[in-house]
Image (tube, rainbow, N blue to C red; front, side, top):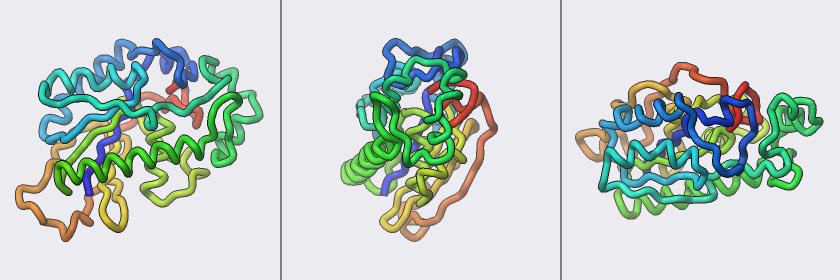
Length: 244
């Protein structure tokens, strides 16, 4: 099946302020986040993209804007299912304040039981995101073939939950996954299992370009792993100094 590049949005004003943004409107990229987004076209220059799908939130759409400007023939699709977790009453609050909430320990140690007041549960967030990825994978492969690559721009907790699903890892372990702002996480989906090709990558991606000879790799089950250098603290409720 297709290869998915998951991009976490660039550093936002909420990240800088240590606020849990959630679906709060008007959260934009800060100066560093804008610079990170400006670097995406160069990092992805060797990768033919069949589609770009974004969370509807401003910080994600701003992140992919330079990439779309560099590829005029590439349109952006929006899918609410890869939008941020609905944190409900926690949205807009300082992470330092939330650290004292009893629910935060549940989020850290037993996230599969976490339900945000006035919001959604973490399992519900994972379920909708996984459903979106699976549907988009099938659509991209049908329209562009099994070697197609597509990109989704989303949020820290969502990407971590998708990685957990790809690895067959329980959601209670997803806090062990780290993704930096504007890092790229790459999953290759095949008929039998997904392969994690990159996790939180902040470097070059030329190695992800399709092979010159279609069909090499016995159905796409071969995968090479890579790791990226750590950038900003992961700004999710799962820990870190920033906010998603």
